[in-house]
Amino acid sequence: MANTTRKTTDSNTSDEKAPKPPESPEPKESAESAAKKPGPMAVLRGAREQLAELTGMTPESVSSFERSEDGWLLEIEVLELARVPDTMSLLASYEVQLDPQGELTGYRRLRRYERGRSEPRGTGG
Image (cartoon, rainbow, N blue to C red; front, side, top):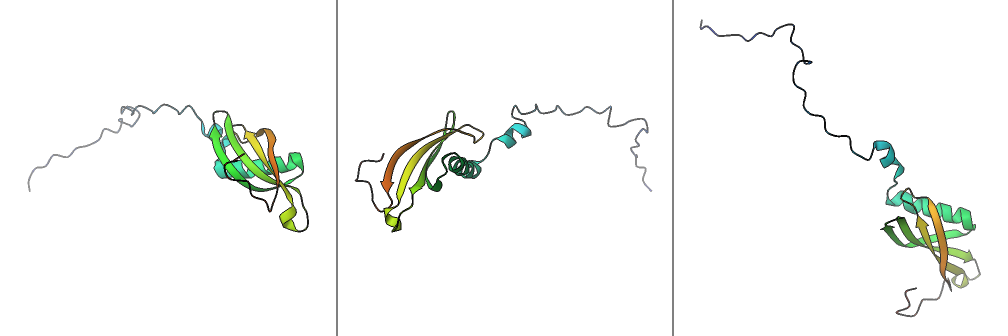
């Protein structure tokens, strides 16, 4: 039998005496504040709901969506006046501004048009 040395641990030694790795600094944005910032889909849904509640009109679609320095900027198509046939219904395009948390801060109507009409080329707004 060969002599082998056995390493024994001292019963008084604990992890408390071992050097701890440096803790990473806490991120500036806490989980709570990150939870307050909705993702794009939540922003879209929230914008449609808020605009409908404020105007009493039905949002049909979102035709433009972008993040801005102050939050979000959307263009939402809204049914303003239902007519028969449906192709004669009046729609409107609204610019909707939201803060970074997705709360509506302002809106304005950009144009109004009949559903069955298309804009002439080059008149994007």
